[in-house]
Image 1 (cartoon, one colour):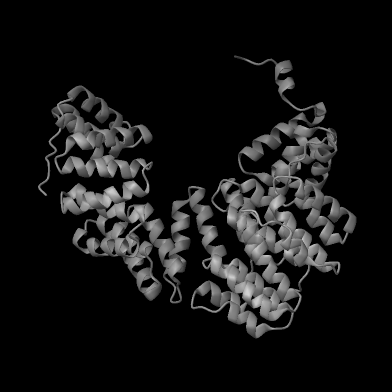
Image 2: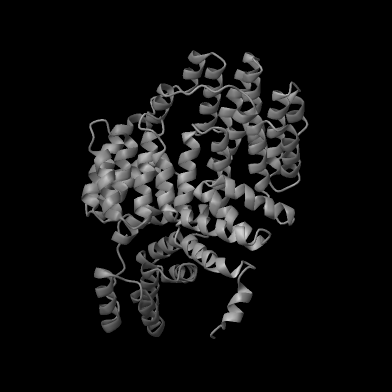
Length: 529
């Protein structure tokens, strides 16, 4: 169907004709991740149509991504007057009110936060506001009810507020409780150390960041004291939530949270890292690199920023550039375990598994007693893919030993043995366990079905392989396995159908093997147990 000019106009907002071009160009720029150009275009469009809600919401989102908070505030005001503002505009309004010390505006924004989907943030924000105004922040936290969403934040900020109130022993007890609930996170430790240093106890602050981890060492050396108050509490709460949202397809909210946090604490490089990662997920690569560029070389987060720069290059499709940057970090004399693993990951992505195994091995050595099942699985996997099965097997077994309930480790060791026709009784047991732990994973379902097939139990194999193919229909490997099982069951037509489906996605050696099966049938044999 061809749309006339009049029909196209109906699909566009009511922007003045002179700025329709700006609006269209802005949309194209936004689609390409060019958020700075998009924000400029939407700014022009909003100036031409200052009450247009469609333009305003696009201007708001792209302005936040581009860091143009003036435009974001102007667009948010349009949305608020129209009664269609997204809930997160109240977060930006609250941060602005705290920064400008506008009590009335802060209370108004708090009311909006408490009445919306981000209401779990309100108790902590109210508590810090009460602290600044001489009230009782703990009464607010005690009466908040601690719902599932707010429980962690209330617990952590109770500890921070106790430190801020100079109630040391209570604060330490609350701090230990909060860190015990989430021992893997550095956020509370960093926030508490920053605050404790700010109130004059630098020795205790450094103790809070004790540990041999390179990140903790950098944080100790680069500790930046902060005075307690609503600005501190709000920025840390927003950054903490942004960290919790990582990897959950919530980039839009993460961008707002980190922009608001940085407006209150421009020195928060932790927020910058999270912002850059979210921008990268939105394909705003140039803006993400600019954000990372604001992290100084002497920042505790400088190494993490270099890692994020590499990840951004990889996301852009610049595999060679990402690999070169990762190699430069990995070959340094002071290269950390994270640098070594990052380079190994990129080598593995390019099927340079012999080289990847060398660096995974170096990372395992560097990790020492702190090495996890992941270290062993990555090294074992690289060795296995490099054709060094005898060297790989002990590492894969060690991964399972360290993580007997981890489906990924169970699946890798089980499938690798089943595919080779080795230790089939053990392989089946491993894969049955993996399948019980993760019954809806098509890859694990396929592995178990394949192990049954290799053991000669086609009747048990077929339903699993069929289920795996339904769950992941574009997998060449799963469809090939299904075809082999159909062939052995005498269902020749269905076997060729499955092999043809596999051939659509196969490459290299697998493609040639499938061509042979389609021409001559399967030569697969049942392995001896």
